[in-house]
Length: 172
Image (cartoon, rainbow, N blue to C red; front, side, top):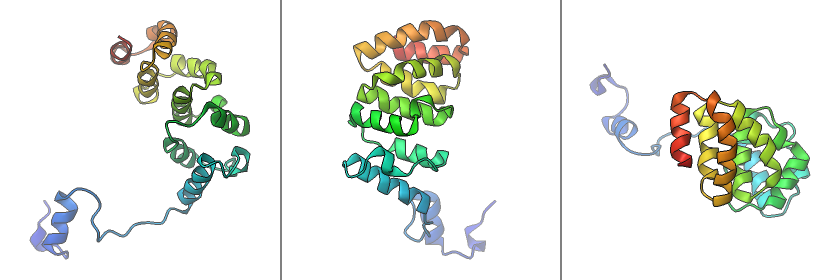
């Protein structure tokens, strides 16, 4: 058991780390130059200052793509997604983590070309983490929910009962 009395740190600092929300002001923050590049590229792309092909993202690793996609604005247009897709073939990615985030952005933007690859993803993937955000987002609109129910009729038999219950609830 940890005893604060035996610690080399002042009690107030230990209390801040253990019992206060957020990161303490005494924390040393690490530099993240690979994410800084992504943040700058996304900011410029969203603002229309940079074309998708000019993002130099072909060399990005999975975590950089996830960071980029996770922070895209929810109101990004289908045209901008089409530009990304044409440059990086995101609709065809075999990386399920990237695919889920890409499809989520596509659903929000009404980007129709994701439908068939997303269908394959939803039928072939069983991890709730990689499908539930998509089912939930699809269920937000009448058209999305209709399409989701068609896909789910095919996908459901291959799902674990826990996943079935989750999707059943999302698409009720």
